[in-house]
Length: 176
Length: 453
Image (cartoon, each protein chain N blue to C red):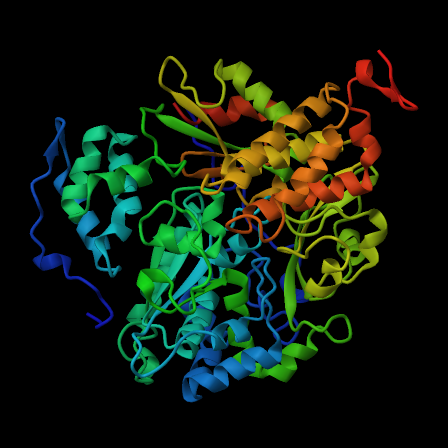
């Protein structure tokens, strides 16, 4: 091990983490403590910790805030403040698949509005909503850095572009 | 259900428009190693192509000599600021009694219309790591962070693998490449929010806080992450350091020839309704026409109305400005900024008011809310534009927008977010006032000095 580490997770003792009926998965807690090794202060792990919870549960329930705070030894207010600031941390349940549709200028110039209309019509939802069968949540996103092939979107971890309204059948079919 | 295959036309892959035969080591320092198949370049291949030679040379010099080389080469901040990287490094507080600080790579590429860092991160992460070793050594940094936007999933994978490879090869960690210098790098991925790209907001986000910018001074070079001296550089800026160290500052400065006083090359690009949108590595100071020609000009049935030279926070320019060299000083003289150097073109058929409304809605949404002019002013601007777009603007709205553009300008808000939003607003009205006048409600049209209905 190099001497550039800040913290040794192997010898760390996790705190108890029950709150609001939420129990942090042991592996998730371990993953958070592993992240701790990269930073001078524990709060720096906060965003990653929220992402770890979200990866398992799909979103971040209230109970997770206290559990993360306990694990990192920081105040729950600090975790909550962060959880409500970042748009990729979901504080309410989302569908099985999250569509991030780029609404920034280059996609706007290449057909964002038509694509947005087609998606909304097909799914029967607007930005910020989830389909009744919990299959898709539709969200706007900042420029995805795919401007040479706009309009672009992401579904979960996959990036697509350019997407014409006619491509939606093929695309959405792949995400049950 | 059928999963979308990796080679489906629907999937986005970052790609350079220049093939391997068009790129050479002595003219394309950022991209000459890239493969035609777009696959990530691993450590072995990177080393076979002279990788880590620049870092090796730098580690043999005194840190101050590395900084001098960067200053002489005149590598200017490629994230859009245009500040000399060498000068930035020379302003970092270093001393035997001071704690060693941090080097942070700003890989939070979210500027509307910008898609250049993605290419370097996905396909050549070792070039960035090498650049970070050089920068870390020059600034006596203890540790480096790559602050990567959360949506760049493929880049995260590529960078994490490269860090692992470099660590195993002894290029990161204790005693980097046998030089006695200790330095390691961690990948830190974000969770959205454009404001994270502002360097002090980025530091707050790195510390696990809300991404509100910090007051300057103190500048990050004096007191940044956890109060330690911190250098924040863009991906492309850091990727220029290895070639500067390997071939020398004079060679680098000469890459742009007589085109520009700035040194080196730039990843330029075009998006919008052109025939072949894409990315090219060209000498800095290449003209907009040259780049537009490479992009094949406008798509059939479209003519160029206006363009943004380098992102949503730069000012609109006219077609005649395409003849200008795209460098920081020149574009700055025309009421705009070079920004990231990735052009977005606007067709005559595009409503400019609608585009500006889209831009200002973006800036309003992405305001962190910390200071009042930005938080309240930008949503007011977006509302006014929405009304004008629908022909419901009121007399005086254009003047009000101009007043906002002034009040959101440099020095009046906490950070550069609002001034960035003010630039396209001010320039759009200056160049295309008639477009806005057309959206003032007919019932209030003023004829002479009388309002008629």
